[in-house]
Length: 192
Image (cartoon, rainbow, N blue to C red; front, side):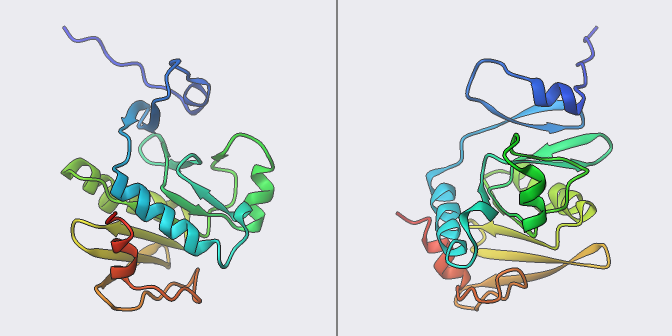
């Protein structure tokens, strides 16, 4: 007989420390270890970070280590690659643990850089899409180097409408209307 795995509450997750540097997302009460990002994905997210910082102060950008609490069947905690905070959200975090709790405002934008494998694709394209929409995040970008495209999801009436950018097509973002980048420019940042 297989013993049931104890489901963690949000508070138990927030207090969890296994004494390692492992990073975990909380998915329906279970810890899911996040493997290290590939160098390609790190370069892409750092490139985007450098571009965003041209238009917003560093206080309003988070890179990889800010937790975002979303609600599914049970509480889930995600670790997006990039988050653009609103000033109101920045004030709500106010020097506390870098966790965006359910009672806090939503970020203005979240960016995920897709890692290899079906499990990762499903997480970024399917599950996070519905979770981020339910959380009310106005814009969600999925950067997919393997498919050589960037999917920009814009929240309209509670659902995301999708626009796919490839090659030299200029990306049109409501969050960063002044951004003058193509999918090819962003994806080439991952080619060291």
